[in-house]
Amino acid sequence: MSHFGSRARPVSMNTIDAVIIGGGYGGVIAANRLAAKGRRVHLVNDGPTFVNRVRLHQHTATGYEVTRPLGEMLFPEIGLSTQRAVRVSAGGVRLADGTELEASHVVIATGSTGNGPATLAGADALSTTLSALPAGARIRVDGAGLSGIETATEIAEAMPHLKVSLTDPAGLFPSGSEGDRRWLANQLPRLGVVWDDGPADLAVDCTGLSAPDLASRSGMPVDGRGRLVVDQTLQAAPGIWGLGDAVVSPQLPHLRMGCATALPMGAHVADNIHRVLEGEAATGFDFGFSFRCVSLGRRNGLIEFVDRCDVPTGRRLTGREGASFKEKICRLVIDAPRRSAAGYRWLGRQR
Image (cartoon, rainbow, N blue to C red; front, side, top):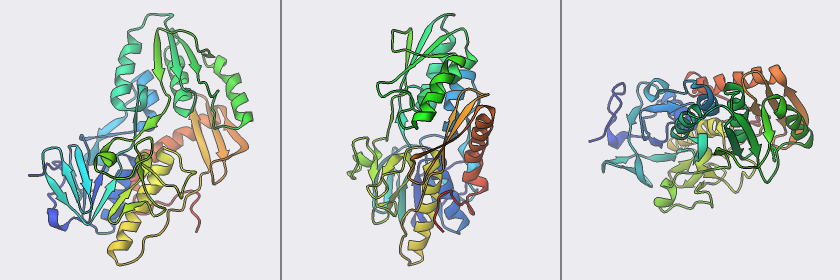
């Protein structure tokens, strides 16, 4: 017997058009977009909660609420199983309790995992640890990419009694332009963060993400970080699709992990499944970047403008304007999966 969310009407297993595994940004928009096209959809997630991951660093430092019931994010006609998927094959998904869900298409949208505040559990644990530290305790954030910078500056602003440092053998903001790295280096001391790899009372790991092992356990091709390998249509095999942090495509090497790609990938997978069910051919995913957002606490930020292939252009928006821009993006990514699912279009898409 399948377990369904109390707000969703049961879906007959033999009429499901798509089972989507993962209730994050990409999985939710894919489910809602397919449902808006009249398709029968069932979503599987290993819990009843949607996590707004772009604010996990804020949650860590301030307790900002980042969860909401997953059922509130989904259209009411979508079936929901709140347990773990343990194996995927063409036309089916096996759940932890032994339930077999049959569907014409399966979508792997399981996101990513990592140490430190990369997950809700990690953010909660870190928050508890930080709250127990005495004044003057030294916190070292390892990893000075986007997540590390945001985590360090958020902690420094919310907990000024702690001494926060940031370090990375690759340097500060390794993917950024030289000008943006210099700007950040000047800002960090003003924000209460020093560049130092010395000993600390607590080390916070922000050194990277990897994919859950569902794809590899299912015998599918994965890369060194466990991500499902998909083609340009975002398909791994006939009837098996992937999106977001859980996948990598050799034909799309410029894509980075994050909600900036998960949302459009989710919309594109939904469109492709609908095309195939209509007897049409799947199309290649077309996406180009426009900017990167870095919050530096609540009152400062950096928006680094990039070209379609994610290469910095040298233009930037900073300070309070940067913080305001980032805040708007954070609100957009929580609204888009449900409110804008049917008509969602993405920046950089070639018309």
